[in-house]
Length: 109
Image (cartoon, rainbow, N blue to C red; front, side):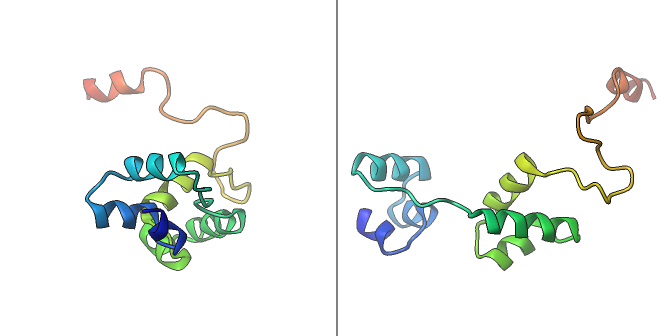
């Protein structure tokens, strides 16, 4: 596995190749002293956000960056900065999500 990783294969590809979970592969590599690669660079993060704001979906962004769609989704969902140019977008420092009691109102309808 270490040779596969050092040759450039992703943890996901190694896991599939050996019939293991990606977490098992990662733990094995770490215990073998392998320095793990950074999953996605800051430049790729910025590009992913640009593409997302322009209307691209996770699969298209992943294809453009050569990354796994799950990685792209995680990057977008966990760190999407507010877009000040977006009308009606979230304002920094404000809560997002349904209004208090909205769930109950929806059930009553």
